[in-house]
Amino acid sequence: MPVSYKNCRDQIYFLHKGKTKTGKPRYWVSQKAKGNLLESIPEGYEIYERPGGMVFVRKIPKTPILPHELQYIQDQLTPLNNQLAAYLESEHDAYVCTLTVAAQRYLEKNRTRFESEIRGKEIIIYEVSHGHAMPMMKFELFDEESREYLAYRWCFKGRIDGWMRIGSRGQLQDLASKYCPALGTDEFYELW
Image (cartoon, rainbow, N blue to C red; front, side, top):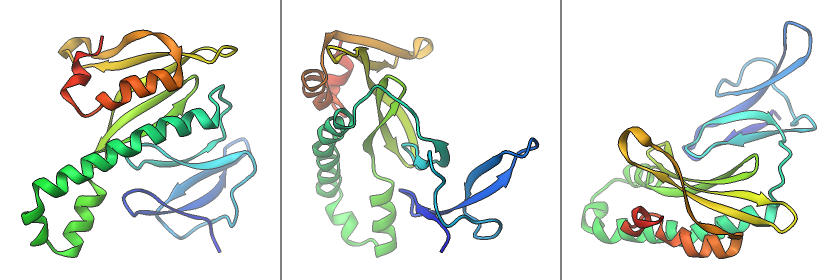
């Protein structure tokens, strides 16, 4: 049975294998179930989904971020995602009741939510809406020995879009519990 992967948009991808011009193996995913399909993921590789649903094959990256640190950020985002879903249901309760099951599934799949990913020495939090991911906040590992992080938020000021540092450095748990609840609120834009 070929390796398949279903992304957040319910699209199914299949793992393919080919060769480069120099004869080295090359791996990719495609929605086509034809070709040289693999029945297992090669050692040292993974199928990865970016926030927003883009799927690809990559070498498993080496990162100084520990798995429990990423899990802590994801745990901070879960209540925010649940609050967004509850808000949408309460605001549009009468409207949603008249929708077909397919339309309700579409709304659930495309609702705004927060997702995180590791990029090198950073944990980046994205706001995902209708398949588009916008960076909102990041935590950058400052010191590997003391596990201190720096917090940043995305600055939305026209031509100077970019990362803006907020607060001072500290432990990830302290920074995340202080800044993550501001995501999706007006307080986010007041973080300096």
